[in-house]
Length: 282
Figure (tube, rainbow, N blue to C red):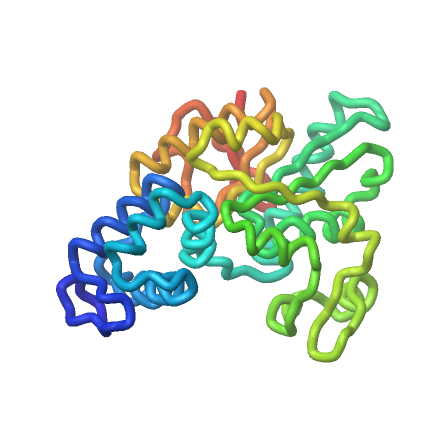
């Protein structure tokens, strides 16, 4: 099922106008856009939320959705995509340890705080990967007060991040010595050791909501990877402005490999490092 006008199963009773309405609501709340090829994706998740809330039809569900902040968050959680794994696009972590942090450290003294934001962090793999990489590959990691914050719009994903439990696929790209050092095996799952879980804090944030972004303060480095690809042009411009405000002057921004800030916001300078292309707030 790929077209917005295709016959839909009676699970949700979703028709084309309902699809447009829920898509517009989600775009306004999250910045994410859903085209007609996502009809089945939305229908399945909407049907599950209707089942859980006992809504008789889409009209009843929309009435509940617009008046219930908790249900709005539950729908957002259901629609977000948390596809990631440890050490994804690790060349950026290499750039962080080899160039970005050494550059920032030149203007600091030992003990100064350096803030790093992983946003979106999904179920924690992104943020914890930063912590592991720096412990392993940045010799000065203990000389500075490194604060790593992981944020996501999906509150269920953040709860999973705090637990720190992962399946085989999430850790498949990590070298075995690192899995042994930082994880405890629990049956078919891997659990991060307590010291590492405690080294990262998690807080909800919405990339297109200036207030929720500002609540986390300013950062020296932001990794915002593989999220802007889900936004339309207006959403990307809003996100870029919020990211610009969240970066301290001289701070660095890392995007996903298929994303480019030069086409969105000219206030960022493109910086070519040995390991990665990143962006910087002048």
